[in-house]
Length: 414
Image (cartoon, rainbow, N blue to C red; front, side, top):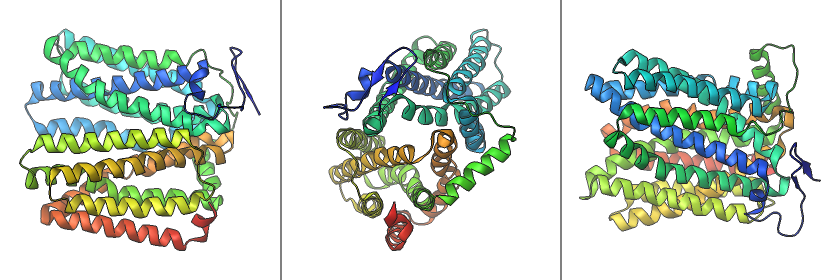
């Protein structure tokens, strides 16, 4: 099989084509990668600028959290509709529209900030709109990848996208902080608007094909997507395992690690930053390793082993008596997570028919994004009573998930 693109680029499987650098030979893939990277950089500029601007206007940490939540709620609520839009109007068109709309919204906010006219309600309104556009842009990008590379290159393509995410995570906050400190939040928002607009325009040369005409309403298409996934028993089982893993692991990592760094290690915020850096480095190494090697044939067995190892990693992080021990645990756990994420996404993309890619990817992302608010809220309550209970309770719940997954024929058949 080979994939023909509008600009004449052609990728066919052959010697070396399944290796990590294979997708980079494709101009369409490079455009997708650049679009994703520009969008992520813009997102970090937005995060730093809006948080700082909110503090300047209100002086309230609660207001900062509320503005950030105002973006996360529509992102989770509209994620499934974002998948429908990708299937209905094509991933390219969905990414283009989402990028341009977000760019226009942030440009207006930047103009208000630069003219000293911005009010707190402007930040809330912009956050809601940004969260809504993200719900459309992200699943469209994931569903576009299988149209741009061959099946053999899916792992490599996803690994390189993850490398871009890690690079943006390192560069974005530092660059945004420098711009805010030297020029101001308005300039940082201007950079955000430019990056968001560029993210949309970069996919413009890609083929607009793939749209599926339908007389059904968007909500009916959401339902149809859920029914299709539910009918694919191995896919349904893997999504349920991912949901359970995220529910129990997110709180231990995002709430437990800051509390652990504060309570146990004298280095404080340095310990916390180092732990997350070790996780990010491990995740990058794991993704690149998975991108260079084909997925194991027994995917279901791999899933069970990975979940069990992640549960052990959560327990080990809660136990770590010294900072070097914690960093080693986070590095190894990050490697496992990065490799597993690359393989899981590629497996889903390979398994899903083209006209359902958007909805399946949105369901997979909702299994993470949609569970983050309750997971963090639950973790906060548990950590407030007993920090050790958060880590050990999360680890036990994850190990039980691995056990149930191992007993499930549906998972074993995946």
